[in-house]
Amino acid sequence: MQVFLYDDNFYFLRPKILSSPQSQMPDNSTTVKPPDGLWRPQFDKANNVWNESADQEYKDFQKNKYQDELEPNPIMEQLVTLGQQLADEKLARKQAEKAQNTLGIQLTEEVLARKEAEAWNQSLGEQMAILKLDILSLKGGMTSES
Image: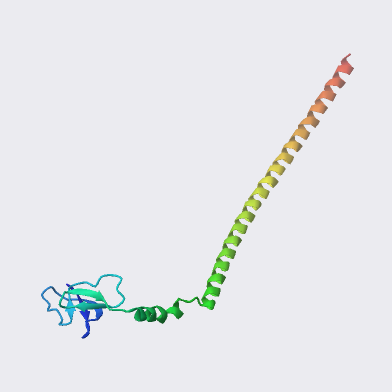
């Protein structure tokens, strides 16, 4: 079972979980949960309710108490900026490496295609030379027979 502890002035301290349902509740506690949104809950034992006890001065003090922690730290901002720049540069480097690899593959494919075309051209040139020789020998044979 959960109870909510309060001090001698009935100001909320903290919740506490009792080890077993048969455990006896502490004297300065209640099973009534303080509603969310109270700055300084104070328990009204007679009516069994929590009330807001914080005045505006208390609220202002609490707001300003942690203001330094909320204000941006220039060093932390620089670290965040540098971290982002580093991440951006790593991403740009990876993209450049990928583009370079793609260009390398394309260049290799073009070189292979050119070598294949050169081999075809040489083969066709050899076939043309053979055909010319055949034509010349046929022409030569026709003239000698006539």
